[in-house]
Image 1 (tube, rainbow, N blue to C red):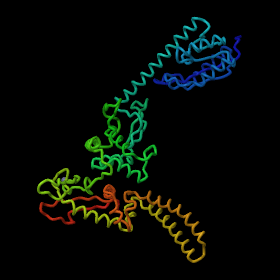
Image 2 (image 1 turned 180 degrees about the vertical axis):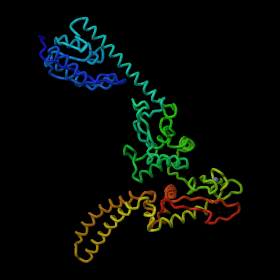
Image 3 (image 1 turned 30 degrees about the vertical axis):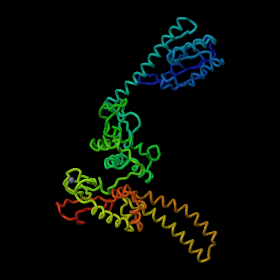
Image 4 (image 1 turned 60 degrees about the horizontal axis):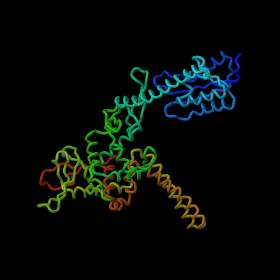
Length: 471
Ligand SMILES: [Zn+2]
């Protein structure tokens, strides 16, 4: 009979790189069988989940086992193999000393490892070194895996805004890999930002507009221009894979933006002259917004310097075919008139809503609160309630009203229009910044400048307008 009173089983789960690692259940089953065979009563089990052996992460169960040895709770340890026990040669030496002091018996499935004999220690040290070597191999394998996945165009790192990451099965059905797929709701925003930057809008104004609509980043933070700038510089949006700071080739995901638009936006973003003086705004209502009636290209302003001879009036000119050129002022005046008229219609907000039911409900809820406020005022006037009651009712309803207003705003799908519609539309338009006006235009209407021959006077029919979002 053995003299062992109580033994502990120590098992460790380590990184399973090629599927050959030993499951912890198997380790424990084998060790328990070994204890039975030896007639060692099993007192405790210690299991560490040591997924990355190389990073020196704490092993609480190993520490607990050492404590159990030191306090005499166990006088033997069974491990599947010695390489499960310690991770570094130094750790092994400490364990050998411990075993010496406490006359600890150590067994492994492969056989006794008698740490009391020189031969046993040598065996343990060799195994320990082999294990160490394997840990080093593992981190090399891991690095190679990253290189390989870069070469294969597989995504790595945080998922870019505009995508969702999905796991796909390999063609042979044995492994899996990750792929980023376009998430249209966000991707549409990203495309819109590239276009607006190419049109001369600032990062800051894009951020302001997003924050004004209550949009946040994926992390739930407000948008900041610099963050958007960094995002737009990512070659990931072109479908390109970056590795160690360099583009290494196509990714296995779809591009969100075409190269032309990307290049144009990036040229602007990297232009040192772009560092805008504070408060600089776009100066022309239709620049990059109005479309050419001949080719569908966007119109750009043609403005001559005052010093040049034969100064011509500022005009919009097609940036693509260059064949449509029209004086700026009458077009802008007409467009402003049309827009203000449109915004002034009492149903403007409703008309433009993609799903009017939510907005209608929110507006009804808000109107009901206003009606209750009016009702309370009437009752006070009629003497049915006191001024204090009126104040209390009004105070309570004020909070409700603010929340209801918030819901109305959030239900408006075209939020550059928030506060721009209804009876005050003309004043709101006059007070709005050029950026705001351009944002309203973008959301509200498509303006196409129809071609007219040289010398032909401006006529309203030369401006075609199509309201967006209208049924
Ligand atoms: Zn054109």
